[in-house]
Image 1: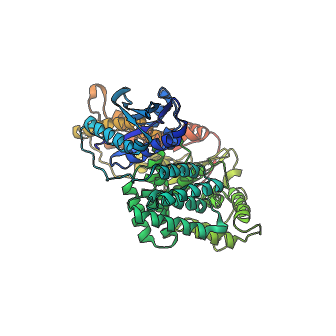
Image 2: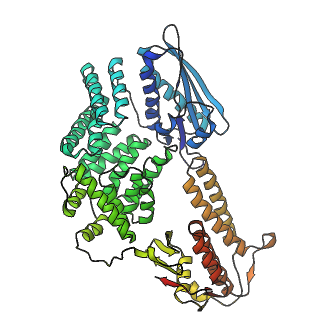
Image 3: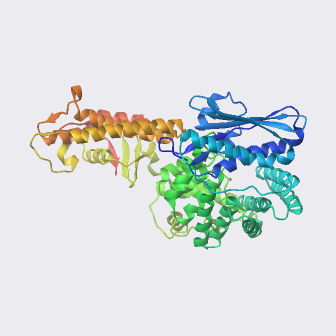
Length: 593
């Protein structure tokens, strides 16, 4: 399907309303909506909002919740009892103007219900094709022909799987086994049993780790034998092969799972985690963001995956920010070990020790059967449950804990600094800034390097050309030519469109990033274009250096202000910009670099 303004078309399937007495078929109705979501998610170019966001909306008039979904189209409908069965009403609604693009009715019996799902899917896709005026390329999909009772058992089993408890997994297994007694070729039932073992394995029931892993693996294989395109079983197998060390086969299965269904949020997260361990960090981050976008009403649902990705990317401040939002410290047995490792890389050693103690305590209960573990035991186990193909940023932390790396550790790191002390520490992609007992991190920029140079030599005046780091011509020149001015304006328009699209899709973080880029671009353009859109001239290119250095210092202070107003205020009052730049604080400050 063609992209809307260069992006995928997004739909949300809202719960079908039950009108009249339908107690005997309500499980099928719940499954009906779930199946529609799965069917639509198999089409390339079509993104489907996760059921965990869409199924919570009970009223079509709940405009606030619907707008947060960020969908281009809504699919909604109802079941109404009739004398011979029931009538299914369905509508396709365009969200930008609430126009009903398509509406239809289907009079069905229980026996014909399953085929109706396929009919509705094809109808909606056909309408979307015409609406967007582009061909829709899709992977073929086919619902298995199974007896209704077997299908009902599968639905009941999936309801239990979603509860995520050991008891519900065992109950779900009974439903799936009942379905297989009725239809031994029902691939989905094998997938369901695989998921019950996968839940146990993922929930870290370590006393039966090997049994759960083998169950997830073997039943997923059986499902694939019957349906080679079962994307859930493909991803489960991909993960089990990863733990078995067969990285090539693992990657093949995971990528095939994505091809079969690129829009199931939970499956995207499973594959994302595996890609981290395989070393594909950029792809893992892309899948993570897509999963969050497809589950907009539960933005905190995938925090652990965010922590894992940004830790291995070396963005430790961001990883810690994600980790500190998780309320249940025991959600992963080694979750607090990751927090400890993150604090190690940030130099926050007191917090590192606290988190490591919590990890040992959780490890003692969950893994070591109540016996006090050694650091070596806890680390060796963590290596097993994080099957990294290559290097991991956990390694330096493990070496430190085991005494293989010596690092000077102060009791409270930088947190003991007084009011008139601070730090500007370049950590590569990010800087750590400390002032007035508050530590922040901020993305690297030229302005930070300028400020650090000024702080290193208080009272010293630096010529703007020295800070600019370039040899500039002294002759008068235009600050910007007509071609460059046109390119600037095109970039401004492109960013404005990108911001609008991001806001429509609920990608608020991306919208904020693009707004910052737009502000910077407009500032640069305003410095070079004067009244009546005429290009300014400068007596010498020294003026260009002065303007550039001034802008990047002031822009950096503006960014600092958002997260540390006190530091920003001090820098703004103490730094002078112009042809000569300097740092002249009213009270002497001691800075660490």
